[in-house]
Length: 338
Image 1 (spheres, rainbow, N blue to C red):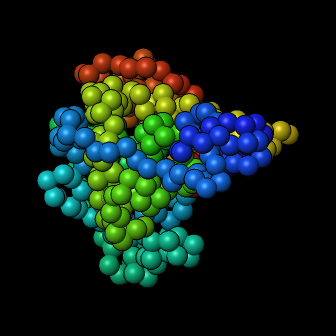
Image 2: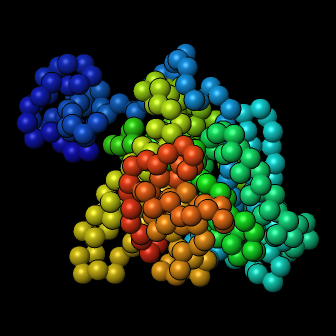
């Protein structure tokens, strides 16, 4: 926001604003002038509609709380899976010899002692999570995941770490973070789950718990469909493929920002892949986990041939989609990185 350098009409009250007497604000990609009396209006989400669409159909949502922010090396502490019928499942995982860092405990409230005392064996929990997720996806029930590349990647890495089957495919996924950034590109402020939920008037209770965040993500995905008819009109397959492209574009924009701030190199590297980040459990740059193709592809069943038709996470029997290939070396979390 800056002072207007040229005279213009106030976008709110239509009075003429002399140069230097008003505010100049960028809204929806355009510079808009407001008089000092009106000021910059508070952004508001579009109203909810009564149209049909995927947001009115069956849907699930998934969330994890973890030991850190690297999905290739950190581990899951708690996980939750909820759906639109009211079903809720949650898991607290025993970390074994691993320690939950104090920084992580400060966020989700679960320390190592509690997780060891109350948690269940990792392999049992992860097997149940993988099976439950696969059941939803096999039925073409979309799973809403806020910042899907983090949650899905850490889940796949954990499944691999414990010698469990990978998810046979990772579609259809609905990522409210990607969608919101695409549909409202120029809105100022944070894009955390809490901030985005507040903007769309979605109730978030028990923030930074897997149960609370998963339920808020479900409600937020439904709300986005209700507020944006053009979004709701897409098939789940089309919406999934659009998110692949949107995320790649958003990652490129963020990478450009980092590169400008660090022209000599050494800055963060933003991975453009969605909904899963390729890379092995030993960290960025290590061999890909079984089933990946080097892009944001479907994680195939162990006995299936890799899909090399593009970066689509859509199931093989549903056809291939658009391509956004590439691999990065960092699991940058855009909702906390901007």
